[in-house]
Image (cartoon, rainbow, N blue to C red):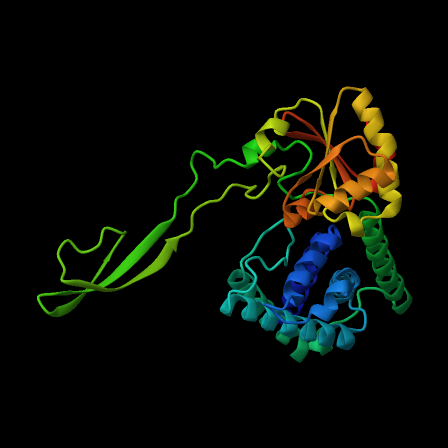
Length: 364
């Protein structure tokens, strides 16, 4: 039991730190995932949606800190009980999402390692077993430092986690795992790789022939002879590969301008998924930035989901000399974790990306 506890302690501690750090690197992205869980069609807790960011920060900081506490042996009973309660809740959540097909990606490891709810549920079951070993063998978890040393390391881990969360919220994620990161080409990420897997689907046909009911399983051809097709069921054997970017578009009221703008060699995109909820201080900075960019030969556009009346009102209020185009809200939240944020592209390749707090650091 002693050795099982030591092995479980290391595995659980490291996994919680890694999982927590990946989400801590992008707490805004995790808050979007929580909003999805809180939605009326999942957990039906819409009153929690406005607090998703605060909850996200608390959860991920607590996740990292518990991993640290476990490895250093700080307050073993409190740590193990907290781990057990957390994993029971996550296991329920991933099972619910998977069984009822509510959320396609669980967000456990953010964009670094996308996992389906069933994959995440399996991972949580393994963790639950390891944490139960810790629970029943908690007496074998001993501090690796003195009492003061353990307290200092635990407190330092908590403060470092909280500080890192604040930093990335005020700037951008330190590590960008998304398909819009600096150096990525959007046109290439919107295309399938030459060796992409195609979907494999089995068709189960129920039909009658000469008054007798029969079944046939094939890949879509169907029975060559039949009196009547009674029913057809499909089963996905292999899912098709999808492009890294699926829903990105730049649209006016009349046409799709995605290809037109992504061919520009100097394109500055101002991303504000919702102008009404954008940071006022950030909006005020866009006038100086856009005017300077236009003088230096950049094509400047805005991307938002706000309606035309709102776009025109904000354009008049702040004196912007550029137009806003339509793009999906979820995509805009993925492109840059800021509202507003700025992205500079050269023929579709992301050259720079900045939070509105760091607009002054853009090099035009």
